[in-house]
Image (cartoon, helix red, strand yellow):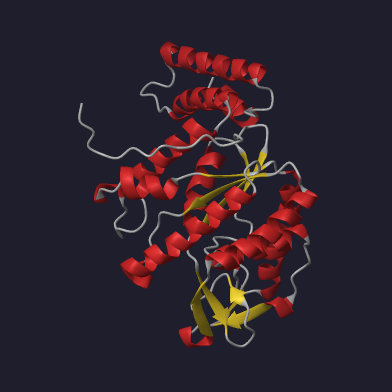
Length: 328
């Protein structure tokens, strides 16, 4: 039988993900997609405590700040067009109020600093190997916040630079949390501003750096081929959003299915399957909500939820059970 696409083989990782464990996720838009799917399906997650980050150096700096949290002050912010920003954070933390901006940043910083010590899993997505360096300080920024381009120097990190920074960081991370396992991915979202060739150079740099880290720490790290799945299995433009750069919802769903099918523990795969059926039942909108048939349907759904809770007590459905009971 002929195959009309190239199927990506996903190597077995030395660890799996589970509902019992805290997972911290950091990185580019793609980690946001997977992180939101994990959140929707009730995994314990802490998603992008600094907002979306794109390059390996900014992600590394964010992790260092979580390992040794120090409160941000007004000196760490700048004001542009009436809005306060941090060069370490995405614009979702920005605010017209300095007090509110600092409150948003510090609340999340100290909350996530606790979680990174409790976490047993981390997902890191590198988006680009290109960085913006502020000319006035030489510091690599996480976000330019639409400041004039002349204020920055732009450069392509080398494989050697990324590996050196991350090797040191991972050793520090495991000193504080020796049980932590890290899954690396490269975002399939193309940075078209760099041009087709420039984008490929950037992605190749990221792939080579991750490969070197994985070889250095084979028991504690793994790689999930989201980039390769998008580029090969889903190479048709129907799997892209309207901008022809970001994955479509169908593509995100397909990559999510590959992730859950290959990276979840057997118990968590079983819970996820049952939870999907329960979610459908919860979201079902009946034509006749007062009918006996619908009441029976609700009763059966509640029974399924209680049985799932008995089998896996750590899977919390308290809010959903209360919601279902109100439908009687």
